[in-house]
Image (cartoon, rainbow, N blue to C red; front, side, top):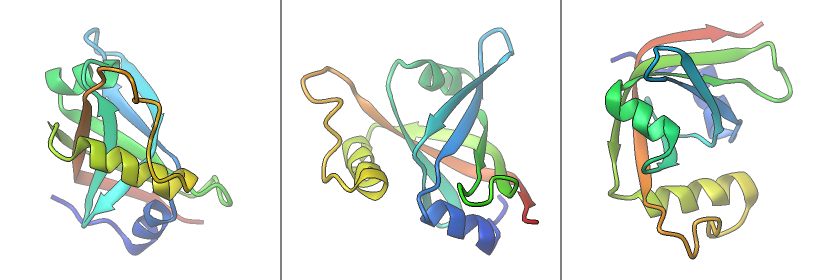
Amino acid sequence: MTTLPDEAKAWIDANEFATIGTLLPSGGPHLSVVWVARDGDDLLVSTVKGRRKHMNMERDPRVSVLVYPRAAPYNYVEVRGTATMTEEGGRELIDRLCQLYTGADRYTADDGTDNVRVVVRITPEKVVLRNR
């Protein structure tokens, strides 16, 4: 495990958008824009069970997450690591992320669906920081 630099923590804590990269069954890349939070040096992302990124991480847990501040897009942190997933806390995480990113108390896009929310925990193995 590797630790996140303070600059990276600040960007993540400022609710900057992130892009998560997973591996398709063919070995090619799959990218998605996501909301991200931090638990110590681990990154937390929410997804729905059965979505492409969820299936990719079930098959191959290697991921890369890129976060860059909107005000300085040439600065970034890339976190490469391993994803673990659990359904426990899935609803709570998406509601927390929704509040942080939009100000709404509850994420309502899943209401009335059979979506099962998953917490993706990314443990950093390599961190690349560019801060000009």
